[in-house]
Image 1 (cartoon, helix red, strand yellow):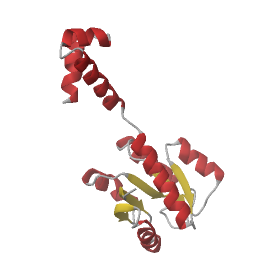
Image 2: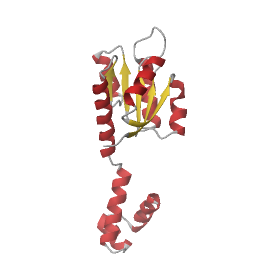
Image 3: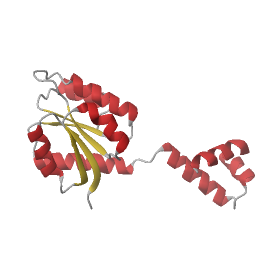
Image 4: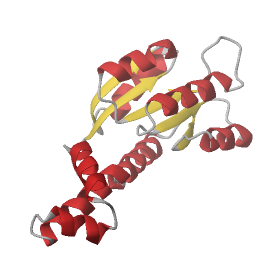
Length: 175
């Protein structure tokens, strides 16, 4: 299998960013690194990001993971389709559980094992690739119904159990 898309790595430690860049360069087509989380949303608005690897702590002396959980929720709110993997040196089971309940795809502890890290990130990416959105599923279903009815929209809407106007509206959304 070829390289996966673009990963955004966010950590306040430059040495960690460098190590992750080297570790992940054979796995991802692009690796974007940020040393502060304040630029996450701006970067995600400008770039197509397929996965975020997010540190949990950014303030010196604070290791509660609350900053990471806040940024996780922010990313999920604005980019729900992008999986987020949490990364922390202060691993507690309760923190991992809170992260996963808040929508994290996985949780990795520092120091990490390179092979394990790459395997987990690949697993997250492959799982993401298998997911089809409801809109895509509905669009395919509508197209098949219209094909089966040889383009007759009245018959297709009847087959789908919706009004002709609803079918028109759905078709407009698909284009």
